[in-house]
Image (cartoon, rainbow, N blue to C red):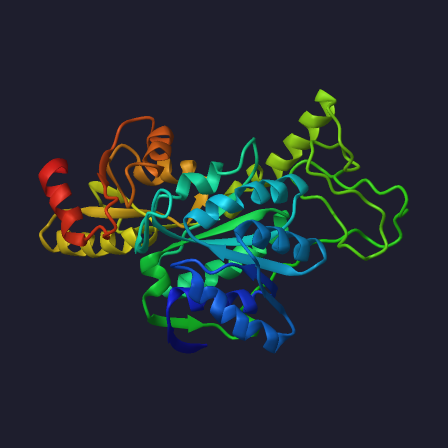
Length: 375
């Protein structure tokens, strides 16, 4: 293991290459631009391809194209760029294409606050593209965790043949911190499963599989005749409006994620054993929450933290098990988004601390909220 000092954006770039990423398409946008700049340096050294596209829509399309050709592919953006990518994220969901999308969140809507942090895209990460679709979204909070969760994002994308969204914010992206980088042999990598050899190449059922599994799609240019389609399709990939066939493939798309939620969920629980109050926070806000907990504990106030690292699928069952009937404070850098998932999971109202003015939630603000309303 080696220790290096670098900001979150560069950490993601180095982790992506370690995960096997060999294609990056993007368009510069604050505060994610450093990630693209670093990929432009790293990928040529390992035989990869970097391309700056004309806009965010084309960037997402290029990443999908590279992925179906067999490359592990990534794109990154922020704010308005994430909005522009949504139609093609839906395309990747429909065609079941593995790809990693990094969204460094900033203040919005529209061009908003380009150089300031926010957590306003967490619901967009789940429901940004139209229609019913499966999605995985991860939200690391600490430097080494950013590295490892980037690798996990690629592993999940490859395993489930699905887009995976990695959510940072401006603070995490630009803060220089110590990152512990494991040796290559210590990193577990997952590659997409391909069809076995010997199949009849003229009778290939592209999307047929057991419920709960991803499809075994071949990479382009490997000799198979098969069909990719953005329209609702049957098990051979051809367009259909047959309700039974549409429902069947839709169910398969959802099941490959839903049946493996326990394996996808990842959470951090801090000082929950004897806590009387639980803070729910993610990303950089969770760092303020940990500091607030340490200070409150020194004053005899028993507070703990439930931090989801996997935001989607939402960890409703782990949250219920961890929290029980204790008081809950949800702290977010937005005007209320994940709080509704927390209340849905717990089936009750919770206390809230929201902030969407371009400044981070501080430990003092969390402490004041708890002392003023929860005790």
